[in-house]
Length: 184
Ligand SMILES: CC(C)(COP(=O)(O)OP(=O)(O)OC[C@H]1O[C@@H](n2cnc3c(N)ncnc32)[C@H](O)[C@@H]1OP(=O)(O)O)[C@@H](O)C(=O)NCCC(=O)NCCS
Image 1 (cartoon, protein in one colour):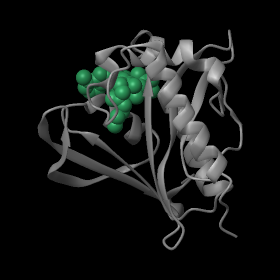
Image 2 (tube, protein in one colour; image 1 turned 120 degrees about the vertical axis):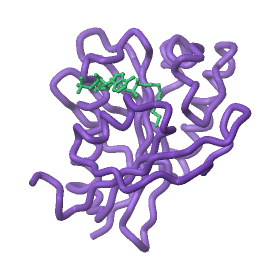
Image 3 (cartoon, rainbow, N blue to C red; image 1 turned 60 degrees about the vertical axis):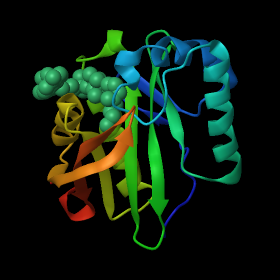
Image 4 (cartoon, helix red, strand yellow; image 1 turned 90 degrees about the horizontal axis):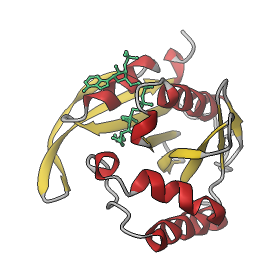
């Protein structure tokens, strides 16, 4: 019943969520070379196109070995990749997973990530048969928590100095949605 093929292509009103490809390196570089985007995530700002290619190669390896990994978020309008979303880990024993995401600055506050996260939650419960999906954000990044709330996730609490990121320990807010809450 529990499925492990994490890369079903998804479609929303304005987006395709699909596998990353090496040909996306230019779009990924445009997004990930901006330190506004990388400030609260665990990866470093991409300094060169080679960084973005290396990032995608790492993801392609995860696809090959069947590990959870990021998907591309592409605009239906012009095919451009504007960000990524995916499962950071999946626990088969507990039917749970953590989702993570980022999107380019020029696309913020247009509802794109809410649209993408809702699709991934629907996929996680509908196709993968998960029981719990969680997400976390640096408390200094409230826009991410807003996206989680809009998708029906609940805040569970703050883990103090949970992560060491970009030179400092950061407090992290944890959110989740349970299968029994999905579509209610
Ligand atoms: C966080 C992020 C994913 C949001 O993506 P997005 O496409 O802009 O999200 P949406 O447009 O769907 O929703 C954003 C919500 O946050 C709100 N918001 C924006 N800035 C905010 C702030 N400083 N404080 C509180 N809420 C804020 C918006 O008003 C909107 O809520 P609303 O629809 O109720 O008005 C995006 O800013 C991003 O990629 N940031 C860099 C990477 C990152 O931080 N990833 C998350 C790591 S946990």
